[in-house]
Length: 188
Image (cartoon, rainbow, N blue to C red):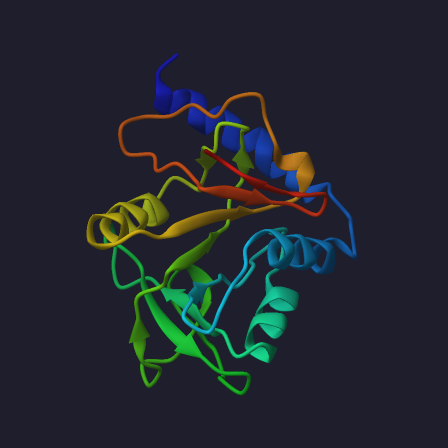
């Protein structure tokens, strides 16, 4: 079975697993784990994501970061097979429905380059690899950001999304850490 076929099969299983998870307090616990493991200062620019479907939400983390005066941004999909861009948000920023029905900051928000990227995923493993949705947006984005400067890529998920091993290819970008509702793990 090819890597692409392995990923496709795992995506289906991972979606079903995530859709079955019901943890109303998971977002708050994950936010606490993130803040205890990754010290953010006012020099950091943290890129979050707007959860869709059954993804672990980042709203609790967003409110904590903004409350501490840390810059927060959200991704925008500029086009097919292009890296994401990130736009700074404030508490009062009104998001707009954009590509793939994802809520994103409007064009009036300033574009920024994050130092920490919190990444959604379908599955992850202990080695720090993630299974995304197959569009390659985060892998392209992380590769581009890492060419220019040192950034941290942190997966954000329910603990049940961990698998033994994620099938990987040459384009897959490794995470620097994983945050779940149970723990934060720094990956060497």
